[in-house]
Image 1 (tube, rainbow, N blue to C red):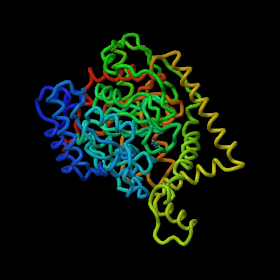
Image 2 (cartoon, rainbow, N blue to C red; image 1 turned 60 degrees about the vertical axis):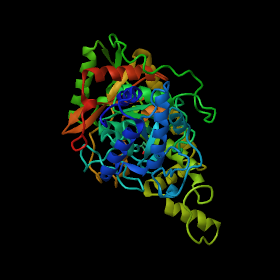
Image 3 (cartoon, helix red, strand yellow; image 1 turned 120 degrees about the horizontal axis):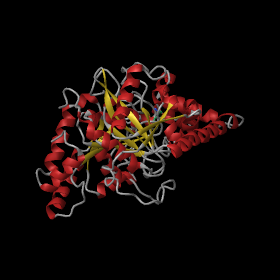
Image 4 (cartoon, rainbow, N blue to C red; image 1 turned 120 degrees about the vertical axis):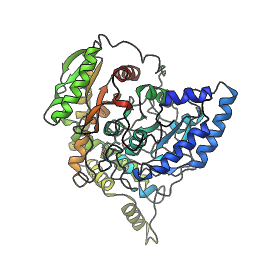
Length: 483
Ligand code: GLN
């Protein structure tokens, strides 16, 4: 049962082949059996079984929503009422959210069962899941390597079939990069497509929630529930949500694929380049046309991001002061001591580094030199993409420069770690939607293909991804020991 996709499970539940309680129990057992992966921070067994029972009743009555009784898990960045919502930090280790994020609320309303909360880099800052207060997550494909981050728990859980789907968030690559390193499908929607209400903010102008699944077909089903305007999020876009499943089988004949020459430069290792080229060849066979495009400002994406994201996080994380939110030190001498020690004890090294960088970049005298400059670069990068997307339907390239790297390999060198997102960050700066889909293996480690589309072109991306998954079986591979 556990290797089935969301689409298959939904069908089986509707047909009465098994109950939601049976399905939920089987996942809960697997989660406990594979706890060494450390992909879950909290397992919400009791609530899961209660919801599963309700789902079974709804299914028995007929006309239950499509995904009723299917189980998923949420990245621990989404607030879940009455359940610990830690964001991977000691700061929020004892935070029980008093309300649900809109995304969580929508899945609940659709009758979907929540198995628990998934491990992640602290406050979503990282590319390896090693900055989590709860320890590293292991990549099920090779347990001495990282699963990627920051949605590493989500990616590892789906790859190991501990849940058929999971939510993730992507500020600079955190859905796509772990999806690539764990061999699953990940979709970062257009900025504003999915509500950020109740999704703990890292960098508000970049953060976007999205689905992490085995297949594009499943990503369409999850996005259908997640997407839409939310009056509680002023940056969510008031725009109709299309039927994401209806275009999956459109022909790709005549599809124009842009390949940015800057994506295939020296930073990309040769085996990765060969794997991506093989994937592009599959698209040629399906009738796609390949066009070289250029993104001259792409090389500025990492420096611009590492000014903008820290600047926004330094503001967002100021609420974690031991008074409004978060860990409070014992016996503070006075108010300053309370702030200093609470924040000093509650935050990990990477989070502190970002708060310092961001506070500096926003300070008087430096604001124009760093923050304003980075915002100007951001516009140039958007313009590069917008120009290319007038010539082509989608842009393709790698997701990561290498397959999964070793645990501990990059954690002491922040710049090395930042470079893990060299192909994903620019897309967040531009606010565009993008996917990572499994496209092969190097030394038994998964490789992801990135597909980038125009604003609100999620249905097109899902179509392009789904067609590839009809002619390849990379997405159906299961890591050894997790069959
Ligand atoms: N790795 C990037 C960072 O550390 C992106 C993280 C994310 O997308 N949340 O900021």
